[in-house]
Image (cartoon, rainbow, N blue to C red; front, side):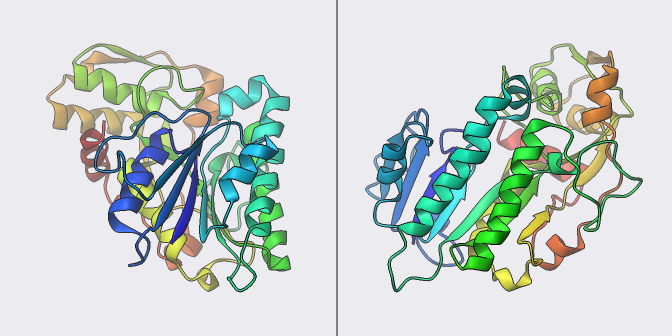
Length: 321
């Protein structure tokens, strides 16, 4: 398989690149993996120097970069590159350039580069639960209206709509998956307003105090990095006949409180739960800490999965911290 992976230098992209090289997709080995991002530090072995890997560093909104990226076509495009939510809110024009216009231009370029005899390329697009907006209803399921309340979510939803139209035209074979929190991301500034979900891992693993910007009763949706990558690989190899007509699903995720997360991390690291104090930001908690129960029958039927239990999620997240 020939695969293009954008956002390859990021948290999920680096892990996905290693998984693809090691395992392929649905039993099919990767023959060419094109990694794209603004900057691409060398990945760790075993993929360092792998002859199957090409690296393209540059802005995907640049036509010359896109032309280089899609040369020869691709069986699968994993499009992970994005301007994250907080940064998108601060600069809506840049969000449009990256998350909307640049994304659509790239997908159209991949479709145009398809060899004549080849089927439409599979596009695995990482959308977001931000398309749901807030406040949310008492239960979120596949019938919940999509009403994004942030620029980031609005642009992601626009791409979902475009992908459904591209599918209707036969240009690409898309799977759009709406991701919740992925744990645990690297520490430091990330541009994500939900960074507190990961920051608490780093603090407790290091045995240092942490002031959480949401309450202990705040509820979140999350999955581990390994589970996220497994779902992405599944999306690349699955039969899209199992997907809803629009080709987009909200992925299964565990719903739990910050207090439950803190206790699970403390149990597995030996840290004192009292290291975590709470100073809730009302607006932040309303947007990122008030998630209701989640039902995802369409994604479940299509073969996507969550981590099973909070303890299993924490164990996996600590292993990749």
